[in-house]
Image (cartoon, rainbow, N blue to C red):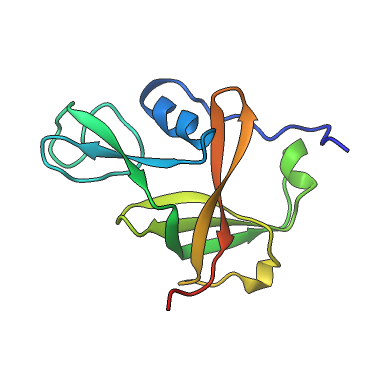
Length: 140
C-alpha cells in the first residue's frame, strides 16, 4: 500500500541542487572548494573557509558515525507523526564533514554515539533524493 502522506520535500534549488539530484542516483556528494581544497557542509555559493566561489563536488563514501542524536517522540508534521519515534542525528562522515539526517530501519534504542552508519537514499520527487542512514557493521 502506498503511503498517503509524502515525505516533505527539501528546497532543491540553488547551491544544494547537486546534492539532492545525486541522491536520486544513490550517491552522496559533498561540496569541495577548488581554491583551498577543503570540504564543507552545507552547500553554499562561497567556501566558508576561504571565501572562494570556485566550488565543486566530490563523491562521498556514505559511511560515517553518529556524532550525536535525539529520539523524536512527537511531531505535528503529517508525515513524521506516523513514524514516531524516529532518530534525528548528526553524522560525522568519513570524509570529515558533519551532516544532519535520520537513522532509519532500526529500534531507536540501538542507536548510540559513535555507532557506524551507511547512507541509503529515498527518492521523494523527480530530481530529489534524500540521504538517510542505517546502522552498519563495525569495520574490521
